[in-house]
Amino acid sequence: MYGDRPEPVEAATAFVATRFPEASVAFLGGSVLTEHRTPTSDLDVVVVVGEDVTVADSGMRAPYRETFEHDGWVVEAFVHHRSSLDWFWASDAERRVCTLLRLCLESELLVDRDGAADEIRTAAAALMAQGPPPFTDAERALARYRLTDLLDDMAGCDREDELVYLAGAVLTEVATLALVSAGHWGARGKALARALRAVEPDLAERLVNGHRHVVVYGDTAVLHRAAVDVLLRVGGPLMDGYRAGGDRPAGDADG
Image 1 (cartoon, helix red, strand yellow):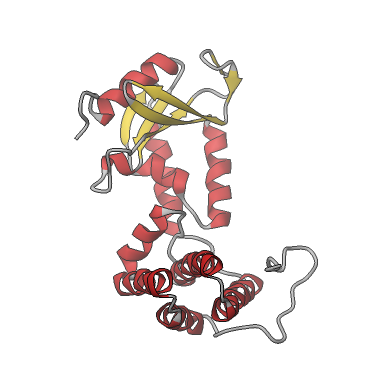
Image 2 (cartoon, one colour):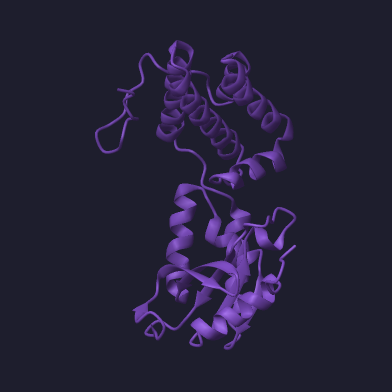
């Protein structure tokens, strides 16, 4: 699986020892530890240092992230101190995407010099279990409006290249709306597909099939039906009468 490279935990442990000898805690997370790993999976490493520690290798203080190549692996290092973890966890919760929480919680422990790993994982588990904050009325209306607008654009589109982009946007919006409206964490990229597949495999398949029909055949009907089914869960399409205040974006114009 890994060719001449060392195993992920071995490589990540050596990486932390070499690049971050200041680390008090370090975790290896991400898909490389799961059945989803591929030959191009990288090592996602969360490094926790002291509040006033300057990392010798970079001359920087946490929080920051940096990408490395180490022993044949691409390594994404997320460097934090304990309080910055709390701040980024809260920021992720506002976006309803729990990437950093998962990296701390669903991980292999690499370093635990001061015994803080258990507390970090306990705090991460509590936040994960709470789930994302529910939509406010304004956020739900915006989500309905945005998806309705995309579906209208897709229905009226007569350019093949634009239709492909619109179908991708619809798929992402529908998957996110289905997850968050049901109290599940959202995600980005390939993790969004995995998150939806885990809780609604039938919908996940319908969306992929619908997107395939748009891209291969130029047929929007399958994707449109799946999208409307999810819209109906949250109040249905919304266009006429939608109003948003000036303190937040009202959605992007399509040009």
